[in-house]
Length: 179
Image 1 (tube, rainbow, N blue to C red):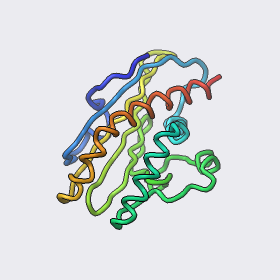
Image 2 (cartoon, rainbow, N blue to C red):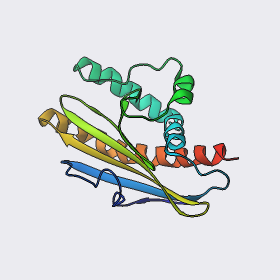
Image 3 (cartoon, rainbow, N blue to C red):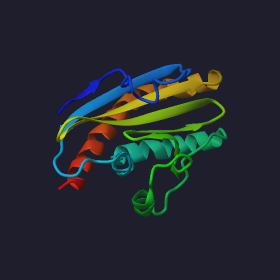
Image 4 (cartoon, rainbow, N blue to C red):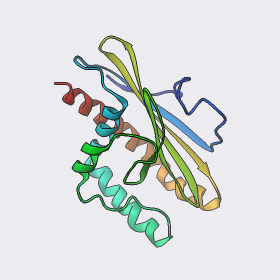
């Protein structure tokens, strides 16, 4: 299936309550999957396993640069596979730069707060009919100062490509796990 730019799902935790943001986007992919219905924890594990090498490389560059500015990095994950295997997706739990802020039956809100900006990523799984699903990844950013805007300006073009690549790989991971 193809990835589409969409609005965040209206039932998303992003859209409930009053959230202030300066940037918001969402991408979705529909897919078929037989067997056991995936859980939101399955989606999160697939998401964290889905990073293509070129994205890991970009994050290494990002972490080296922002460390000089005193901003948060994801740190190194020496045994990433073990961390992913044990990841449950409960509020407060972290995986690299992503901390779990909220959990719903079909959604996780991940992200981080920093002095220049806060960001949130929603992983939202919908079942439309038996074996027919869609996964939507939404991103919300709130700038705290001019440095947040400056930081996000060069990141934004890469962000679109990264989210779409992660979405595609996450769906592939989910489908492989169901076989």
